[in-house]
Length: 260
Image (cartoon, rainbow, N blue to C red; front, side, top):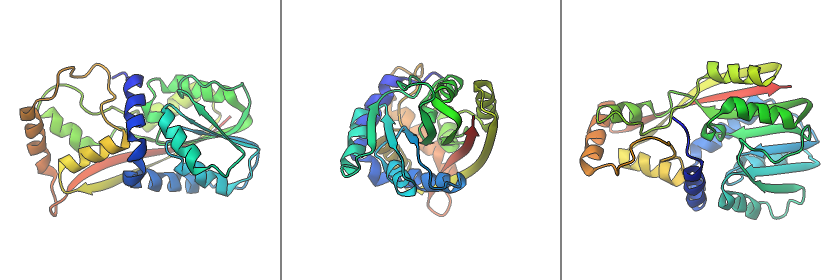
């Protein structure tokens, strides 16, 4: 299903004050991404694409000496949160923009990092082509994104209720590899890991997704308000997954290193 960018902006703007309190998975994945990339201290210009509240931005600053680090996010309030955290850093620039329409000069960036942000882009091949265009020769893209198994329990539970898409559909590692090749990346390394979070109730899971801003971004789904009866049916269906008095939620994470 196509992704609604207006909803994304609104959702993540509203979530800027609550995001850090519930973003444990995002921090875990971000640290794993840095380890996967086998980063060495390097200089040049680095773009943190979809910086959110600046967790990865701060980590990246501690790992290298950059001429410039650019923090970019589609939600202005997220970008402002990052800026407030990094007021003492004078080599950081801030851009509010869409990853699918990067306002950057061709071949001006040495490294692009992106942690759990590109899944909110509708046309990944177009995104990768744009990123390749701004990378210098021998530049690299390092990113993590959600795979299709993400929130599979929630998807299955909603499928028992109606035929609408209540949960985003994400690209597979095979599709991502193909998109990168089509965009012109020469070296591609990928890894896949499944994380499982546990919750006392579906309500707590959904509240966490709301605080992360990761909700209601599908365009073309059910345009009617979800009824109380439908919600109760979904919650009842989710109970089949309960183990040891906890409900699991699966998050498939695909991490990638791609070089020009």
